[in-house]
Image 1 (spheres, rainbow, N blue to C red):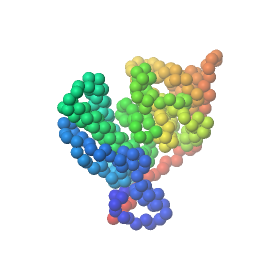
Image 2: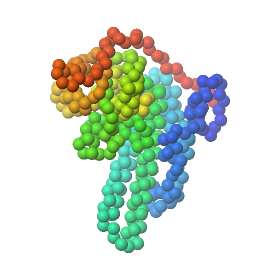
Image 3: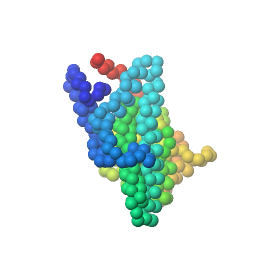
Image 4: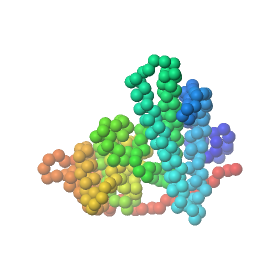
Length: 337
């Protein structure tokens, strides 16, 4: 992927969508980069000053270009299997920095609240109050930019790796996008502590669970599309596995802009999987999609379909319902000099 300032030839109509994407900033980048604060404080203790923001089209193109370059370089070589890991780390670097900025933003907001309570008269105090507020706004602006770059790089990662990017732990809950991946721990903590809305999404819960050795993602996507037609504001809940049915469902959620909550296995003991199932059942899902797997899926089916009481409409796919697995060879992209 070339920089947007450099003109390159288009050899076929198939190249036009990619070229257009390079020359058009997404709404997230426009929101985060195109309307910067008139003055900003980059580091604590600095005086307010004018600083420019990167061009939104250039920022988007470079983020996507780095992910694409990793895969282009390693595809069809002996390092091919390492490309997803390297690209994951690149996306995660934005996530790590965004989290650090969010923590700093929260601390500054707490300081502002304390200062607002005491409101000492005087020029020195007023100056300190103004600078603290501007620093908090500046950090929020930086955090928004990091999240926009992370989310676009994550979208590129999904396109190349074939699965959604997710952090090693915790949540990916963005201020600017609707497609968020939220860990169950953050979700449950938000409900008990009434934390920020983006960690406690509201909407009808649809549960998906299945084994990791499931290859037919199309059957999952097709049924989820049908469910979303009836429940457009659905919140997807999975059992948090990084392959198979849960990964296919998470990829669908990322593609469709649906919030996805991953209920991974937390704690110790043999019964943690079944405890997770009970936690999911307590969310009162309105619909479920279960694929033939282990006792975990059987347990969920029993919880959703008791002999007496409330039953959850459940779609069940057996392993034999899958289409044959046809491996797709990823072609290496050749970039003209």
